[in-house]
Length: 218
Image 1 (cartoon, helix red, strand yellow):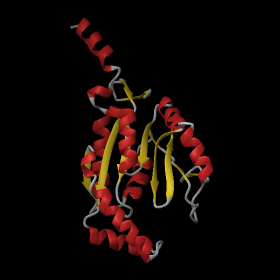
Image 2 (image 1 turned 90 degrees about the vertical axis):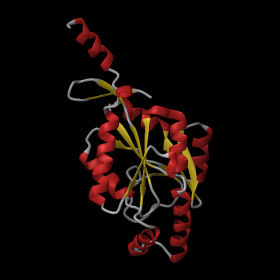
Image 3 (image 1 turned 135 degrees about the vertical axis):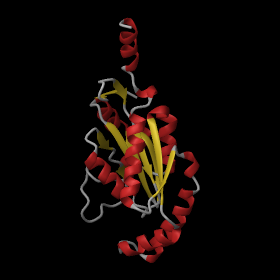
Image 4 (image 1 turned 90 degrees about the horizontal axis):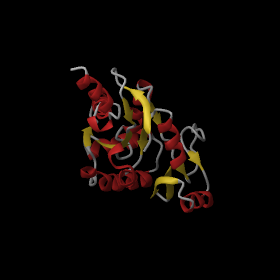
């Protein structure tokens, strides 16, 4: 993946972070993602392509890129996705060109994707990917959150709970895990992870030049 133009206080160039947040629906991932984007100017959101219908209040190109099944299949065949998955009878994918453009502009990229997408992204981008899984405090609390949203039928909630159990079983495919029993505390944990990953030696592409200069003047 390309090197970003962003830097730490010492002005080292570094590689961009592909920052993945995953969780069962209702665990608070979207809230934390919104807070992170508002608080981190060097972080941009990956906007997925989907075949599911647009919901009230959603904006095409901001929440998702909405396409029909035929167009999605064309994009798959043309290798236009970094990753894609089939979820609840609909398809979701990450457009490759969008991510390359964001990295070239010096932005880290935030991904709101499931374990399948995280796995595919890691296979493609390896060390540039940081994977964070967010647990709900309990499955009972997760069910209560889904019910209190009043956006899904009882049948859909049952399907989401079944999927949640499957998603939780893949927690060991992530670099970090957090429990969202307090959104501010969980958000602070996510920010700490992002800050530490940005400072990893392997991402500091400008460090070698600094060290050479340092040793020449020693």
